[in-house]
Amino acid sequence: MSARDRMAGALVLLALLAGGPLRAAEAGPPAGWRLAFSEAFDSLDTSVMAPGRFAFAYPDGWRTNRGNRELEYYVDPRPDREMAPLSDANPFSVGDGVLAIRAWPLSVPERRAAQGLPYASGMLTTHGSFAFRYGYAEIRARMPRGKGLWPAFWLLARAGGWPPEIDVLEVYGDRTTTLDVTLHTNEGGRHRQEQRKVPVPDLSEAFHTYAVTWTAESIVWSFDGAPVFAAATPADLHRPMFLLLNLAVGGTWTGSPDATTPFPARFEIDRIRVFVPPDQAEEARR
Image (cartoon, rainbow, N blue to C red; front, side, top):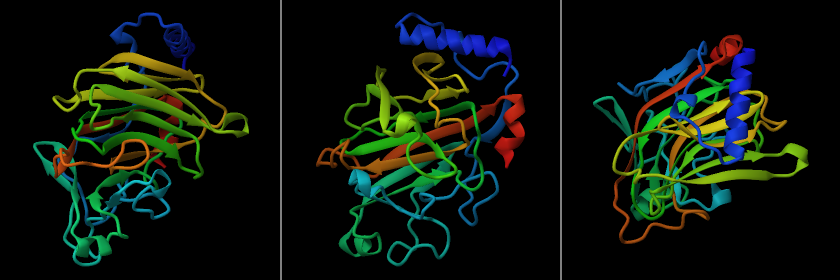
């Protein structure tokens, strides 16, 4: 990273922490950073995990997050990955360059094939195929509306363990005018969370762009090109991270769906891109 980029990142961090105004032009990939990952969702290969693309569960094979008491089972749509009656289930659909991750209630027989969980949904991760250390990660997406729905785009450490975690976006389906951006760190040997709840237009009504710029000095979140929060980069966030994209249902933080929740729910994604500094590009491809 150039001295100019480091200075720009420091100024953004200081202005945000001080509550000062920022110009939209200050967000976006820094000049000279290279495009290392791009997915426009013209298709989604569910026959094999193509290099540079997606897996369909947590790296350890988990199909839900029981630590959060979530209610979804992440379906793997590839052949012979699920037992009947879920063997033909697919939470993903692609049309007009948009990926939809769908969630829906399961029947009692289907729950038996879904570890007893009452909802099906989908997750995509790049664990094992793409990770990067420092970069600009961006998603353009539209959120689902409904109590108990919890879409997210986030980063976890390739080496495993938790924290750290960078949440580029989290939205609760019954609070779609609030964007949660969060940093989890274990700096100093104990879990620490930094978060900003950002007032936004109703995120279920249109596509918006969500991004994070992560450098050795700072982490800056932006919404539709405008920086909204920043934090100094903690000591445990100097290692490669991979991408996760999911639609959770229920759990400790968002509560359970109710009679007003529309199903099937749809989390729609137009694109994902990651830009990296020139000296990090080769690492990003491994």
